[in-house]
Length: 378
Image 1: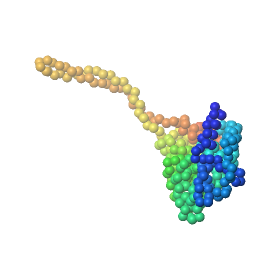
Image 2: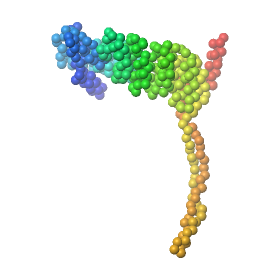
Image 3: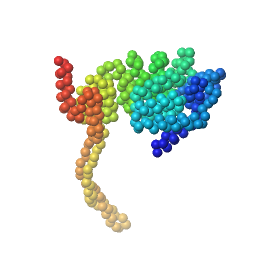
Image 4: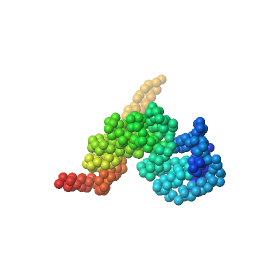
């Protein structure tokens, strides 16, 4: 089954109708679509485009047998990668880039980023690809006006394509004029695609002197449905090391909505500030500040004939019984909340902040924290 799945991947990877394996004069190959532009050829790939002189193309292009050999080599490379071994996938992606199999390289990077958006070797490769391939002509334009135009489309257009392209957009933004990138990145926080919001939040970490970013990032850190986006938003806020953010997140540990309390705890753990420890212990002791309210009724009803409604019609007496009911029982006003899961979140946050683990015993946490505070004051 594994060989069949790999073969299926190769069919989609190496036999795309819009892509072909192009050999250059230096002997390298690249999977691209060729576009003629004057005396140049534009190679359009899944990572971007690059213009080369017509003379750069080799006279002898790869044959069917050569492509099959590449397929077999790729199959052998992929078969050696255990499931979940990200470093191995990145190594395969690098091999694919070296052989020009860019579609396959992108597929391997996508699988890594879906599991771990922070995996550094994958980011290193994407940084290299971002410098090698341009998204469009405006990216490499000489006029500043054209480059500003590219900055406006970097997040809204290109980062919205897919996860790997969003990572490439982030690495391109790092090397661009900061003044032209800030507004598009700020706007990208509202994009419907999580990849765009992730790239925007990560980019805004370098703008610590721009207070306009604080409120949008704060909202994303608590409310964004994607965990990776929330994490990047917290990191961007945390670059200033300002304890006021710990205070803001700590307040939300007692929000009536459980989902806000949980994301606030995660944010405090990501900030990594000591100011978050005591509020988390308090939240652990409280066990959840609120929840979904509901009513449970446990009732018994008995019907009985209360009276007779007598009517005379055509000399006949008609007596309709009047039926009533007696209800007895209790109505409970209850709050339903997943306290076990919530306390587990507080525990993990405390463990991340302190490197200790006292389970969900808030008394043990409180005792340890008081002892630690006394020792640091000496």
